[in-house]
Image 1 (cartoon, rainbow, N blue to C red):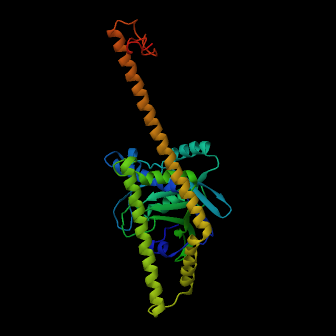
Image 2 (image 1 turned 60 degrees about the vertical axis):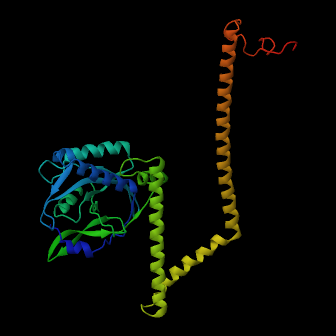
Image 3 (image 1 turned 30 degrees about the vertical axis):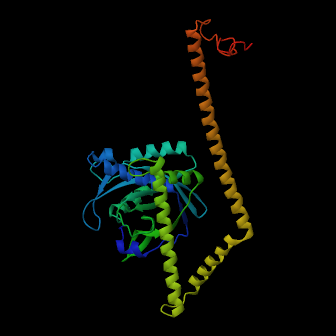
Length: 346
């Protein structure tokens, strides 16, 4: 069976009816794998876990990393929640089956509910060797998923450079062939993943993730999000004005969505929202005030301790000069007993 050309995978979509849920942990693992590979380009191919897969449409070798996708399937929903790296035989594009079986057994012991649901690769486009790897993984899963992450940078691209493919059997020019067809997916996150992704997003290229650097990164991300929101709202406003003037055809679906969006806005002016907002705002201010009072009390306590220690030392020195009864004999005694009171005080 042969591999269909790239033109078919660009225009065909999966018809299996499966829905795919992709977790951010998988994307973080793939990105980390690719970054480590780039950092180890001077190392041997086996140590860097790379595969120089030739045969791309451009004709040159495409350096990429490979790995397996772990997850589970419930009905028509496939959940992709984890991944691990694969290793290729040195000098070839063949998968190291012994290494793959060992990793599968290890992950099966740790995550018994997760199975191999597919594999991933980093590449700007599908290579000819991808179908060979796909057919090899059919021995583990009869219908594996192929996830391709495009490592090339494109500042104008708004969507994730992640593409999901299924393999389907089609008859092309009288020959049955497996081809890749693109499938749709959604990002599914858990609470722990949201915390982890938020922490990763705050880390700057310098590696710092605390103090002013972390605040700068957070404010920068907030500024970018607000800027994007303003640009999207302005674009929608321009589109509605053009529809009103008749420059573009009237899209009833888009207008209904815009109307539903605007109807949500007056909800922030309701008395219930104002009451809840005021309560939360006051609670926050009270928490800040309590923290400031606690900090001030601790500072005052520290000053009192220092004053007591200084007074005790002065008392000890004064007692030593007067030939008093040894160390600490004057602590806590009345002033008249230390000989420091005025005549006739008693």
